[in-house]
Amino acid sequence: MSKFKKKKSGELPAVNTASLPDIVFMLLFFFMVATVMRQNTLMIENKLPFADQVEKLDRKELVSYIYAGKPSERYQKTAGSEARIQLNDKFAAVSEIQKFIYAERETKREELIPYLTTALKVDVETNMGLVSDIKQELRKAEALKINYTTRIGEVAKNR
Amino acid sequence: MAKRSAPEVNAGSMADIAFLLLIFFLVTTTIETDRGISRKLPPIQDEEVEPPVIKQKNIFTVIVNRNNDLFVEDEKMELSELREAAKAFLDNGGGVGEDGCSYCQGARDPQASDNPKKAIISLVNDRKTEYRTYISVQNELVAAYNELRNRESQRLFGMDFTEMEAKYNDPNFRGNKKKMETQIDQVKVMYPQLLSEAEPKSS
Image (cartoon, rainbow over all chains, first blue to last red; front, side, top):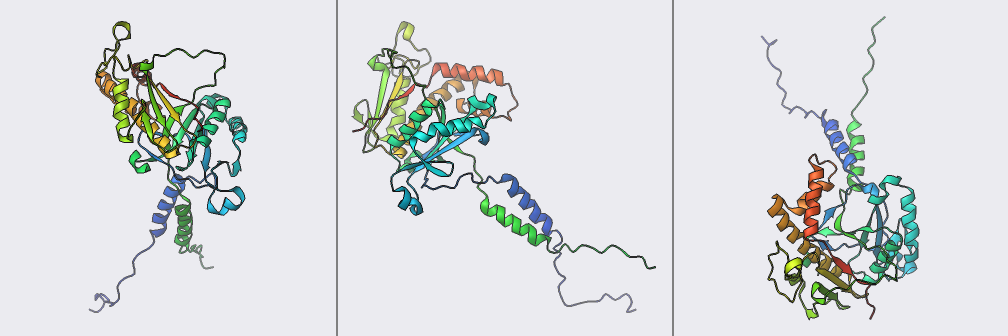
């Protein structure tokens, strides 16, 4: 009779964790695919303004970025506290923008050149003097398509 | 000889490895698509070319001074009123005969713009103007154009202009792009974005 008696142990059975790696891998792949690595290390403060009439910037490979703003605290000793331009990973002068645009163009296929866009990521506190200097240089380099990168929200939040 | 089965690989630490990678990607991830206001800069023109003569009533001057105050047609204005003011100016349609505007719904004031095709918004900044004010003003002006374009696009094609443009620019959109392009161009001809920016003044 005791042959058929189920052995009753007082302990709870352990939770089966065999599928845990699968779940984690699934999440891992999601993040690997969705990840965009930061291209540039920002050396400036970069608080973007709000706007709501925005368009999406698709095709990241066709966008070159120009950053502008006050140098962040750790660079203020060397770069001063006036708003500066950052191209790639360095501070740059206004006159270097043209060279930067030409260098960006070099790396792209010829048929894509008309679609190149320059995204201006400018800090809210920057003066328009610097921004219009940048724009003037872009006009000289014939990079006429620009995009003022913004956050999405009411303009009233800019105050 | 006893039959030996291949030893099973211990996969117990797989989860740990996967977790490590997962945390790395979680930390480095920035899920973002950049968005912003797209504008087109005017090409550099020869100095010798005479600028065309434009009637004063067809120009809507927006000035932002160094203290970030907004002046529209030489009168102080709040930012929240700018959109409506710009729309009223663009949509005025005060012209008669050849300059007339059949689709405008504005006040038809003869002192304001003749036709949206001729109405120019001129934006003047100071070098000391803050970027946030500039973007706010740009946004409101672009919004004025977009709202008028949406209205006409809605009337003619039953679809918002901005939606049409987004679809047109979407590489994954499977639809009649050719037809859409002509529709977009048609609306753009009705309300062309004539937004001129002068070199900022330094005062």
